[in-house]
Length: 452
Image (cartoon, rainbow, N blue to C red; front, side, top):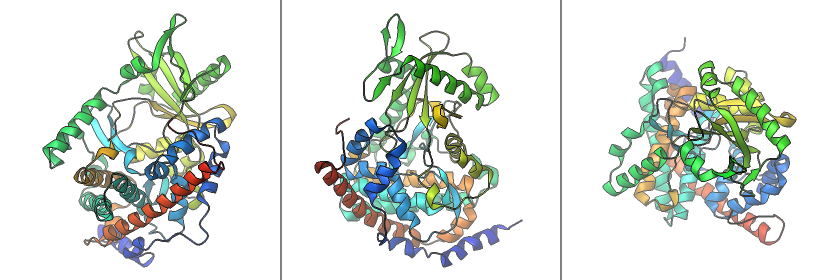
């Protein structure tokens, strides 16, 4: 068995593959794929009539563009040397893919909360996407480059600090580590920011299936139905509803036995197609309304299409149990979520749908909530960046060799300073790519629907 000292030496040896300071010297590759071409290729198997919504949301701002361009950034990260220190990656670790949700015990946890692109890969890819997203968000909030760089650096320092702490814990203690929102408020330095976070948590607690029931349904033809609001929510035809029923049955079979017992206490009421997110627009996503004891006891589930991760084309195939799941997109998402999250949705499962498409299922709303990044002060953004960095480290420590990563990071801030430099450079690239998209829309080369 490899000793802790030997594991740290493995990490230090990775510096010969790519030095810590080298992470900051990023420039676009000479043969960089055309970003618009990458996005168009990604949309080839999506619902074509919805793609203008995706482009419209990406065109709204550089941050909106970054959110939708995970595939573009994956190609950019793959073009430079990596550490070879593998973890289960989120694959799209921008700062809005962190948030709060209810644990099975109904405690509010803060964690990574989006896994559509999850895949094993080098730990720094997630760290760099997080740092870049912070730099882009800071600039969008009117902060200068010095403050944007400081916020990005804070996230990486938070990651390193948490990883060093986790490296000192035993395996079970590291695995069970979590960030309970009850522990968040004392970490926030200013009373005004603390009150804003408390308000966000109270709002998240109200985001339940019952709240969604009041917002998303209406009485129609003598029964409760999901409100149709094209193109964002669309009613399904009768044959489509039957197809969703079959998908739902197969999804149920992937749940643990106790979860199946609970789910069987609900009956199917209605389903609809729903547009979600930015990068996901065009994938097939359905919301399913179920009724428990009575109509005042609703449960909303989401069945979302899961294609190939944007990372898959850039990473070698491997054979661990987690990576075998890559061959089914829905199972890949579910496995990655279970690996990275401290606790996961009790209804998290996967299935194969019509035409062999892969889906995963989860609750639509279970006290889920995220922050309003565009209203954050510089200090508030740094607080949040630190929290996201520490959260990402906890997720990586569950699936990678935390001692090797600490061996690579070392005690100095060399890695954090380099990734902060990368974040500003990538923010520049994101702004340029965003301008190209906007120009393509103006020239009529790309169809976009704005404000939807």
